Amino acid sequence: MSDIDPAPRPPIEMIAASLRAERVRAGLSLTEVARRAGLAKSTLSQLESGTGNPSLETLWALCGALEIPFARLLAAPRPQVQVIRAGQGPAVGSEESDYRATLLAASPPGARRDVYSVAAEPGPQRSSAPHPPGVVEHVVISTGRALVGTAEEPVELHPGDYICYPADVPHVFQALEPGTRAVLVSEHH
Image 1 (cartoon, helix red, strand yellow):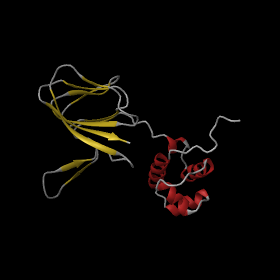
Image 2: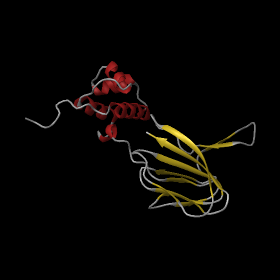
Image 3: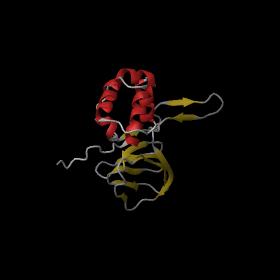
Image 4: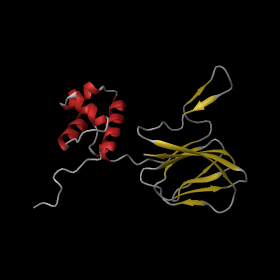
């Protein structure tokens, strides 16, 4: 008698979000991915909507059709630390006013975000314990200077600088100048 459950339930919400994201990234329609995988379009549609119970074989066929590794359906990629210095990054200006928008981070599929205004003064660093798996934080310094990021590799930021780091590991925020202000976005998957 085997100790392995013969029909374990896959993490369908993660699979659904990953399938949608990878199909969109590849620029393919539901019809085309279903054709390449040898599946009915309705089956793929159900999987992307988070219903159904896909078999291992179905998921392998979809990975082949999307040309992605199997693990990408089951585990979110680990975020990397990203820094965008003031005046850098893809920006678009307005014709009507002195206004410029710079994309710092696009919202990934299925993500939820909380946005915070941070006011900090020099002194002991704010050390945060790891948040739940998959949480990522984005910080933009408005005024002052701060040491921000993972506890192992914090980065000194100046006004207008941006950093993105995994927050499911110990991380810090330490103001280095009086009147330091920032915007912090906590992204939950």
